[in-house]
Length: 412
Image (cartoon, rainbow, N blue to C red):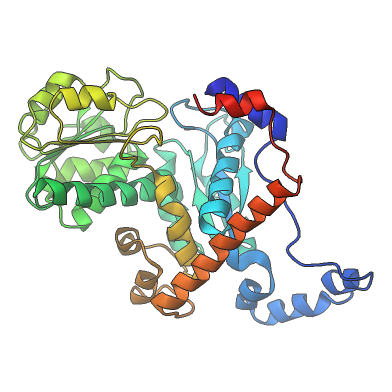
């Protein structure tokens, strides 16, 4: 798979391109799309900045911003190293959400040689007027917390951290459905969480916001359980989100993960990739009809077959080649599309829980109001257009088919 990915990326020179969406019907149309005609567009937007959402591509545009310091399970890949992932995110936004997205991988290193969250914040605030929303991606902790929380409040457009809010939204959706099948209630279940990065810390917050009991949650990071005894977290103000979890969860201060898994209803892992990170015996000790989400990428913490053999009732991973994918790609195209359609000023936690454009209107962060049917029809039209466009480019040879050998390798 890795070789095929490299071969096909090299064949196409990446995954996305910029193409016009307006026609050229004669030489004079250059004067319409550029000078002198476009002067009217500039002055109209000058007098009403919100007009930019109607008169330019801004109303359907997202910037995918990353400093590439936490790319999948590969860590710091250098700014251009994350470009393939951000480009892939833009690809999915177009094909699955009908959204025009631009990957922007930036260098967040300051003069001291440190990765500086303030540089990311400054960059996003500078470019926000060119986009309808910002998708943050693959920013290492603790910087990711400050970047998101600052930009959510300081920007005039939605700033969404897909590793955090996106993963949390989809994990909550998967958990709600799994609990229905297991005939359990979110407020009653005992939840053990392995990994305390941007994803799992946000998942915990969203689960609590959706009715989960924080006293029934136990979370572990690479150094142990999150409790009020973790002075290393308390003493570092950059980890304020983790310290909140230390203060609100695990009241009995359970410090052994094997013990934390005993009689647990749910295990959610977003931690170290690798099939031996979660042990089969931990799952064996869980409650009846246990739910196991092992969502590290690219390799889950335990393979689904092994989790099932250990007695798990429902197993999910972050990968599309296994059953029950729990991955932010299932949510971010639609959530961002909804936010764009109502010209939302931010994406609230309620919106992440509801995963619908209508919640933005309820929360008072929408610039315009539309009905649910209008939102559905608009999204449907744009998504169908994006897929038809891709299909047409393929059929007419503007997107060439890769060599037969690569096509065969895709069906491994």
